[in-house]
Image (tube, rainbow, N blue to C red; front, side, top):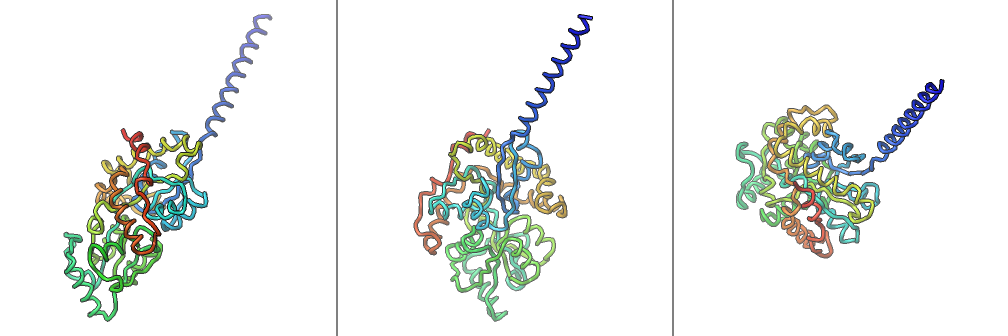
Length: 350
């Protein structure tokens, strides 16, 4: 009888320990750190989709909440208001908010030379589909002039709102690289989805777009041609970046390094094995409606552009900042180096 009572006591003790372990485990599971990341639905944000889809964030104790925006300025407004903690989109709006005292820094890049100018109809006539871009100043000026003569109007080029990376890069290319007067074209500032639809509907003659829009357009518009590649627009063109609001705040220390390391890991995976990333990217960008094969093709076509090193874009960011100052979009140029946290990137890089 005594042995039985002792055995029951042991069982109760074991049960109590198990219950305590379960409770503690549940507590740990629910203690995942929430990180709200705003993003633009383009291929340059693919690292986020891989991190989320593969469950890397969850394994690292992070509850990644992805918030979709249709333009950089929209995402910037949310960042400044504190509705998101981090941001994967264009870098130039970050310069503008930093000029107004907002503490935000770039920890990694997602891609470079993302944007290209695609044209169709008279503006694309005679261009070789196998040799994208590469037009000389003279050839581009002549093409625009010929278009105006033939159609009795200026060409319409869709971009995103003024202050966004696509708008600034387009204006920079036209003025500084192509030597085209700003009044030689009509730039239409709309959000990214609307720009793609406007091109597909024939409402504009050209558009400055990223992947996967470029692959979709090539499949649907047989006469579409690349008027200028990402490198033509500006070498090492700054694309999507991973930035954090208040990066040195104590609560950021819990996840800043972890998420940067995952972002670098995912970017490297996309560059080396785009086929492995394609299902996650297709699910995020197309809601399951966009075929993985199409996304895989877009990823393979731009694999070399997936670069995580933020130091790669510092020179081009400075160039575009100086251009924005000259155009009145920024009051003063600030030291570009202050925008980048290269130390965190170095720590996150294998």
